[in-house]
Image (cartoon, rainbow, N blue to C red; front, side):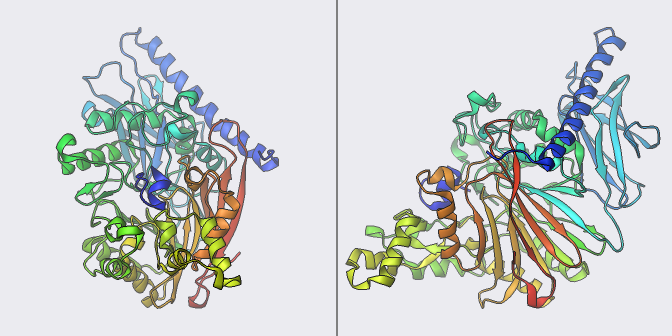
Length: 578
């Protein structure tokens, strides 16, 4: 999302005591941190002693696993080298126990300078629905130990996914990662993008970075291959990210900040060709580094990251790219604002209704339609970046001409004392409702109708996961004829600030309640807390638990479930209920 101060969406981006569950999660976090710390110390110490100090490596960025399948999973690490001109031949070990007494796979993989000394290996021939432990060895040095899991097949009783978005290193600590790593029976982490942020050290949400010891590296905006690598490397030193990465497999996609803010197919709001070079070069660089530092299984074309993961007959998870592959340029709402703040509603509606506007692009749209048609899983889940729900609010609010509270008071006045409204107040109330965020599916209405229409025609139980906005949302997904097509669970950010930073004088609970009242399909909003989303699917329901951390400004925190909502299967039940 943009951080300019033009609209509500632009402005968004530009002390509970721990209970017994909290203490249990803390012990689990401590276990993984201690394993990682001991392993890392052993890696450095053993290499120094075995090589006489002349040839040593460490694994300072931890380990990770990702893109799990029933019989395979990708394992990842990064060597911190002593010689930046040579390659390092590693051995990846996979075992059924954390003591590695029952090793089932030993595979060679090389960490090369041209890949920034990252190393990935796709381990195949594994058993479905099985927990494995893994590590990387070089001579007597060993990486931290990681834990992963393959996907289930056949009839599956339950699938649990921890869903994340918008982890801004300088904005605060990644306590959401730590809390999720301590949860029980999580099948995978699903990251919906903004895994890193590309801004300079003085950029977005960095005002407390120095006090927190989290100043961005490098200090300039990311442009070059070295820039993107250094920023990914910095994020991977975070202990809570390392704990999460070592505790479960991750299924990830990018959003805009892995390249540049408000990116689209042929450019970005935060890219200036005259001073920063060709967009295609920067985009390709960002994609290359993302794959280097993420536990992904790369396709022949690394820019095509849409893919499907089946959790038996219960869940098909379709990961999409709404950002770089097929997206057309975002509509600029300011082009429809006239003198005195009047709004050209007809022109705006015509622009939104353009049937040629793409978000996924033709190739990816066809792919998704095929996947929805061929999958027979109970739940069809879309893992994607931006809000799909219709988020229309009065134009004066979207354009920051009036606050939510002031508009609510004006609407109340219109009901109780309409004769007292001034002409200016009547003009405010006469303005249409419009999408607050044109970077989301709201800016690509025809493309959204295609997806919703496909799911409805196929009678699929559609569940959409979204990130990007930094706030928590629960939406009913309605087409333009108000047919119920599915539901949306949107995760809050890991650390990026939400509307509480845009409206510091508003009571967050009153603000969220006002937004819920203004937006018909919106069933839940939390616009002030950071955290993540836990999705639990069974044959009987798909449930979303919004988990919130008490702070991102300290590593000492508590966590709690703020709201739980669910959807039941069947065409008569495609709506969120408590």
